[in-house]
Image (cartoon, rainbow, N blue to C red):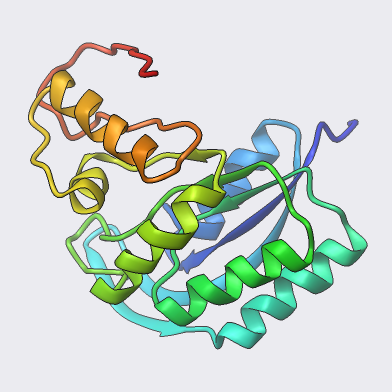
Length: 191
């Protein structure tokens, strides 16, 4: 099989395989691409919740990004869980140093069971520094609410939140609507 592209995934590890690095590797592979990883944290979790989170040192995250990128040049980068200001700054520095392009940010903030995965200071840094560096941000509704500080109950609210994220510097926004009560799939583009 010919590999379509090489994707560097920067995210936390989910021991249950339903999210994080494990889910991203499955998606990348199923689409015919090659996935590399930089693990930001190791979690013990299952479908009922998160039992523990062990953060990786930011220097080790940088080592993973830079050493891998030096050998296997990624065509794009997918970022997930970044739990602290130090980690966000480290990832930004490594992306710049490695001259990585085509960056997608899935701003993982809260686990399915409700466990908070990022601190408030890091959310501010993410908004101020990281969002303007990405080509696409893909928050779900609870994440978009945290980033925009508006309640999202409708498609109109989603559009308003997307405009706020664009104003923060994101080039493109995809707000995932699975938390809305509607059963219909709709697509809207904001300019």
